[in-house]
Image (tube, rainbow, N blue to C red):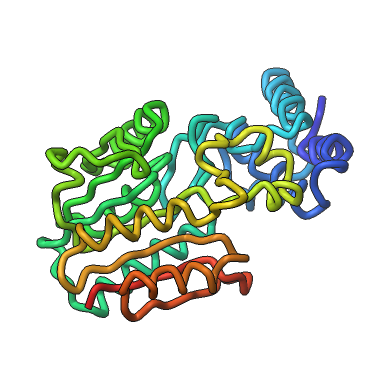
Length: 292
């Protein structure tokens, strides 16, 4: 019978060409925690614990999928984000820790600016799993939160995630790059906060990305034309000029190599208090601006 210790060894051998030792150990720990329905502390404390035949088969199946580069979150079918659980699939991007920092920034801004939760209207553009919109609604229960995405499959997942996390978010299938129907309620409404983690990866960036991203995550949610990498930021900024309330706030997650360019874009369109922030890894990853 295989033990917990054996599984760590098997995964280390099987994934060594894809991940470093620390990443492989973290992946293995997560898999065992899920399959054994226990805590990471228990897994670490009892390395000689034996797995059942069924558990061994399940770990083998998971390892087979991981060895071809499939992200662990897609294998397990879920990801954790801002203390909540989100279902994920190849129609949606996997939520990232830096996006959690963007959500935290929004929540801190609401608190520091004294914006009334009950009168707050928030729109998340390109929602994917719904992680941003749902996390904001969970922490600002009195706010009205809407979200749009071009992908129907992503929106269906986002709706399921809203139900899973017991919040109400208004989801709509809309393309921010397309001509905007003026009679659509979501787009005709003025919002206190606009937030987006739009596609921003260039083909040059793709060369340096891990195959578990480029080979499995949805390209429409990742990549932009090499000759117009800020295409979504331009469209959303123009939309914000007409659809933010007075003193409304705009938040973006950005391409770390285009921070200065994105700041310049927003300032050229008349936004004020444009602030570029780094993530916990010291990379330029977030911007906020206002219409004050």
